[in-house]
Image (cartoon, rainbow, N blue to C red; front, top):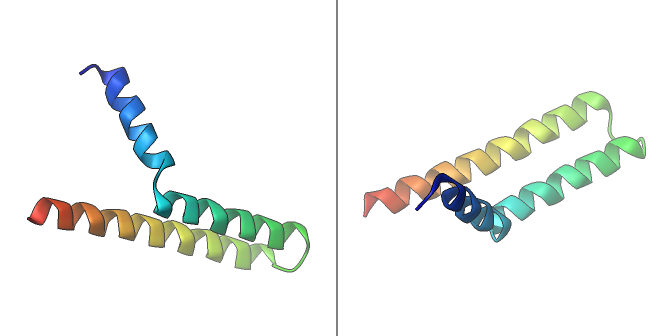
Length: 69
């Protein structure tokens, strides 16, 4: 398998991931809140960091459990 094929497979896996689309939805919601003036910049930054932390943690947990057994 070539590097390009591996990259395509990883991208396909990302696009069908519910965790990824939940992250995208959270980021869109934060952007909408910020651009409508409902959320201050510091709240938007906190929300983005929190969304990325949850996504990273859930992916790490999934990978850890997959390699465990």
